Amino acid sequence: MPPASYARPASARPAPMRKRGKVAIHFREAIGKAVEDGADLADMTLRLTLSDFSELKRDNDVPLEDISFRNGEMRFLGVKVTGGGVEASRLDVGGDA
Image 1 (cartoon, rainbow, N blue to C red):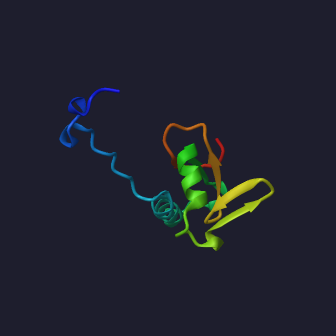
Image 2 (tube, rainbow, N blue to C red):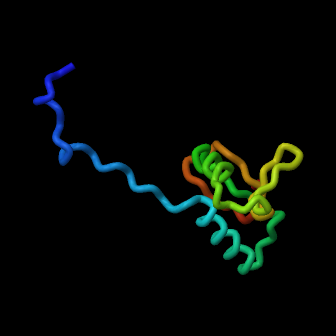
Image 3 (cartoon, one colour):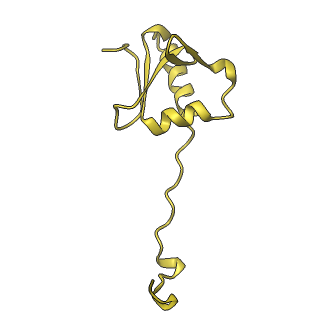
């Protein structure tokens, strides 16, 4: 271990990454806008990164009635949710295509 004199000063350390807004808030707004634009909840799929999927499932600020787990499928506000397989989370309005 190097002596303390070799330690980087606090000002030279990288700043912590800024936390994005909550996944639930962002996609609640996106789903609401899609519905206003005429999209059907049954045709939408919320494709989340694994970290966003985990955050959504564990977010204590999300009311229990907003998330459901049935038949091996998770839904948020009535929209099917999938986790993983994407580089960035997104709402697909056209279903599974």
